[in-house]
Amino acid sequence: MNDKRLVKSASNRMICGVCGGIAEYIGIDPTVVRILWVVFSCMGAGILAYLVAAVIIPEA
Image (cartoon, rainbow, N blue to C red; front, top):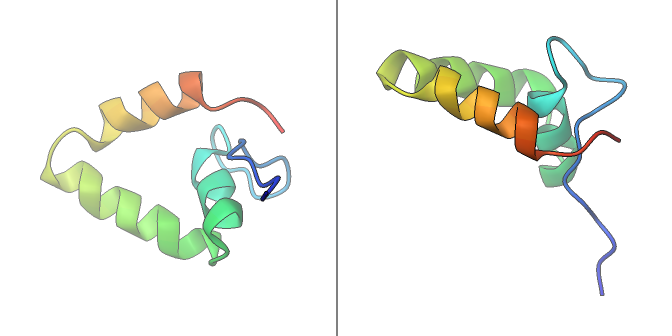
């Protein structure tokens, strides 16, 4: 089994570490995730989704 877990990043942290944690989990650059999240936010509920993710995703 894969022991990989989605957690907030401690090293790639800007606000809460959500985008950095997602990027580490997927294995891509955190900047790409941040840009996609901004685009998602401009389309609608991105800020609400970030706040929910910041509460739900555990700390590293």
